[in-house]
Image 1 (cartoon, rainbow, N blue to C red):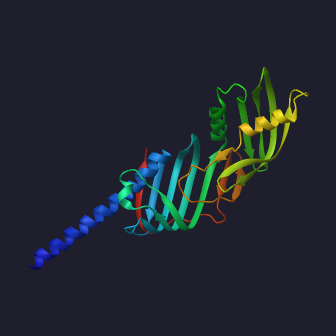
Image 2 (image 1 turned 180 degrees about the vertical axis):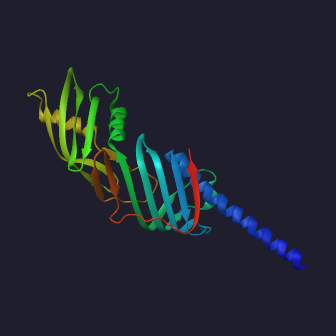
Image 3 (image 1 turned 60 degrees about the vertical axis):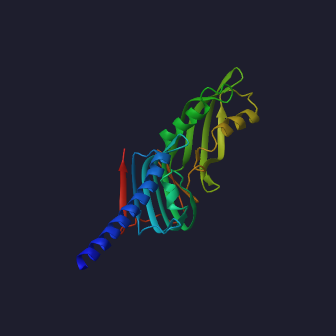
Length: 242
């Protein structure tokens, strides 16, 4: 009798553990499909409840793609985070509705920003940039490229600071421009700059994060919340490598 009871309890425990692991795998699979990362890891402090709430969750992704823009890295730490019900995750329906605390940081390379702008404007005729080379330095952004306007191909040099806008976008800040044709009106250069703004747009990121700071280094920009996320060292870890 005791042995049967022990086996029954063990079966329930194993079934519960597998179900729990399956739910978290469904969550990780959603973000892998959404972000197409080169690597991903997900650490949780404990199981989600039946409503999809986690006490603490840490996510670290490398080579994330958001709206054709590659992020070199994305790190997020969320506490008291409420998703939709776990039963929906297996269907690929994951919604992060709210969180008590969200700390995040993301690094973007200048080469990926240049490629994203070229992809967005290629083949547009008027409004197309080509041979654009933006360089990020600790003091700001410098660069040049050619902008098509009517029959003209205008070389524009840019010297600008950078700023975070609306918590998820990186914009030129007070850009100074020079053109190779003296008779080009301001509205044309303003239109040219508008075509590449924002440089980084994370509004389609399906997480409730808000970024405030931007740190510039040679070749990269890092956007972050007011405090940086710390790794969750204790908990269950799930990993993915492409």
